[in-house]
Image (cartoon, rainbow, N blue to C red):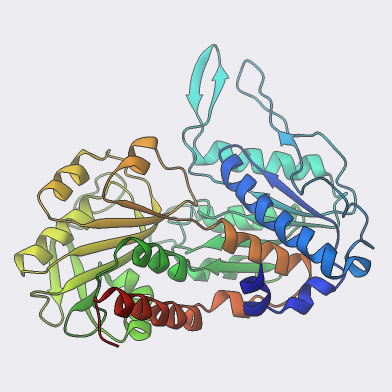
Length: 405
């Protein structure tokens, strides 16, 4: 609790919130919702001791927890409706929705049907409709932005992400919080409401440093490599804050064919400094099948790179994990770091090469700050926190004899 109060303005929690906080965890986000709720409860209970008078003036503040029960039952034909188990009148509602939770199923004509992103998005709208305008404010936390990869029009095609954002705005949503949007310019579709694309850079790098205690983070021993031109910004950030060099791969594609919705990659071409003998950190937003990141890792190994650490905000592994198990055994890839912002299979969680970056505490910071109508600027810039993290890491290495500071 003390680190939270020192890092983020503790006066924020001495103010009256926008409204009593209500957290709705949609299907597939129950575990994450419980973690976020636990952090919020911890800070609330601590704050009651510090200054009870100001906070309890908001009706509903004495709830046993912040979770609001909501569900979407289905008829035998697959049709559904949204339902709330309790009143949310006057509440500041935060709806947590994972459109990638394909582990959720429903019954249709007696068969189990996995929920697609479309199903999750429809259920989100049903719950907003069930609220019926009674809440004081509705905020949607959608870590993986629905249709975020269909963010621009290049031919005769739909603009699904923009349509979805405008639908949410028209339904009365005040703020949309997403993580590592494929293209931040989708915010242009809803310029009159709050839209934040939060980067999990600090949490991902912190998770790596917790597992790997022998990293030497300097220009002689480490490099940042961007997997493609679309990931340049996030990799430039890591390169700048860590003070190491950056290289770049660009993908040569066959634009005469379309496979699995995209033009297939012919080759990865590398631009940058020599990677021989260096640990390489690669950051991207999504690992879908994982084929691209493994091709990149093999190219780096051909150039005699040392260990390869791949980080991603969302790890789907749509083609399974066998290729990654094999690559790990062959020494092609050392670690894959991903957040818990979308569904991970038990097999992935148990993989020796996988590291999970828990985002629940950070998400609860965001919710608490918005609920008290305070600026998110300190939360959205992780530069200082990463620098502090590095200093602590160097001190730990010095004590353990790994590094001379």
